[in-house]
Image (cartoon, rainbow, N blue to C red; front, side, top):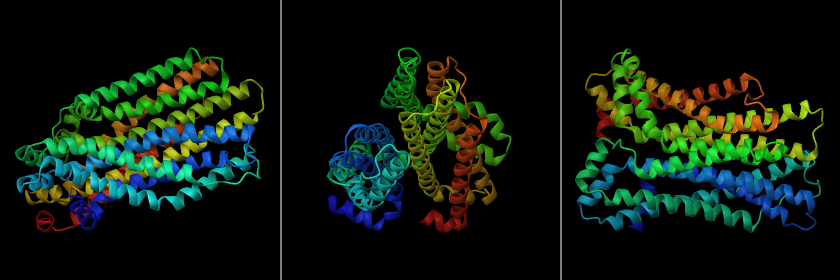
Length: 451
């Protein structure tokens, strides 16, 4: 089965593109920040410089790790779900559940190794850029060179490999246990019921976000920039919690918007049907929107509130405060780039896989314009859900930190911060989905169905 997995990777390289890109970017981020630990262990690196490097590696790298693992799991799950018919065919010719599981894990392991090795060079360059930023802001002496050594490589390759194989094991377990007839049914229509594991995961993340929010506005009140440590965790935990519960949220919103959507005619009716029947794939698409909106809005307004608190006190920024601001900007940059690429990557994979579905709709009478209209409406609903959930997630950071630093739940910062984040989410989602769908409908319907 391992040989079959390797042949599958060679023959169907495009199908693994989404998983590969997630692992590649994840390994790049992990190794870049892990190299701060290599740099901190260098000769002559002591005191504040060492503390800054270790803090950046642990805080940014730690939350980056969570985002990476979640992204890899999402893309692998989507990839396996899209291959339900293939899994059913293998079972029908005698493949055992254990063999199916080994094939899926083997594919994930092969992609993880390739992605991790190819990420070494860009990770080293990114790590050097981060140290250069620390040099420019005076947080690390200019004579401290960037080091990219065994800590960065081992953490990047190890974590990428372990997270990919673990996600594959979880995904393969369900795929292998389902009977052939059920696999065929899953290939045609997804189960819409939210699993107990997703409910438990979502509840746990939301509880952690609530705990961090309460901690920030109680015990951390009056502690200055130290409140950022707990406040900054809350929006990420809340965003992941909403992502876990995304299938149920999508079903609820679709029920509320069913009548307005059907007012758009055939395209609206198709959109409602798809949103109801394919909540698994739709939740994978909405996840990066939630993460992007929640983390970007929360961190940007957190830093704006901190700047306002410093100005209100009539103080000039200390070296530590400049360091915290730099750290936050790095977090924002990392999140924006990673989740934006994850968003584009996931939507491309999800939409491209629907080429056969689009062709079947056209053969039953739908025009290309109606198919594109359906995709546009689906994209609009997913954007609304993602932005709304992400905005609520950001509140877990913004309000508690405002209370802790300014005795006010109202955040500082221009409304244009929020508008800018939302506009970017809308553009990325709409352009990616419609662009991919437009390419799909250009293929003759008969040819697409036969493919």
